Image (tube, rainbow, N blue to C red):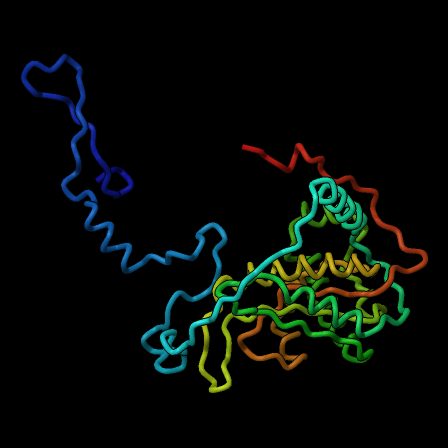
Length: 297
């Protein structure tokens, strides 16, 4: 055992005949792990599809005490495959389309001054449909988009968010965090939650609930919903709408209850959506150049 109490190979002085003076040899500790012991431990503890860096919170398997609450995967029907083909463009067209799309999204900015001017509901439904085209783990589509336009409900959401945000700014967030935000002129006052014609609250479904009330595992639910959120931001930019990506710290449980969402849903993001106000301003920021964000190997 080393001084920390773990089993590691130890280095000892070499006493073999003919060995050079001061020579050393590597001797395995008696209680060191063997390949077979590591394999046994892996069978018990491993979560082969869970990325430890990402710390995805999806449960790998049903627990014994959960009984018949979870669906048996063997009962799921096989999904037929169909032919797929995509539009193929000449290289010159591909380059131009890629530039055009970049120019469009490079204009996207976080906007906190939003106009109360009405936005067609069909537009909101279409951008959410677009977000729903995102890939997801095992095609579980673990997202719920709650669209709030009722003024009273928007105000209740604002009250919850501002109450928690003031505590965040005054107590929970460190001084450095608060100072970094100050240059962006942001604080716990969220006028846009009342003003924006729509609030889109994006919930991740930590597991699914089938019509027979059995639970279904939603693999990589947070990553899947994050991808859908990114597509939603692009879709909003495409139709000329703006938003601010808000992650209301410590507000999730209260907002879930207010909106009467089930226990398997957790709030991931809140987006106020509308046209930019006539007097809207944004910080004059620059994005990193290509050479700072790409590595070609």
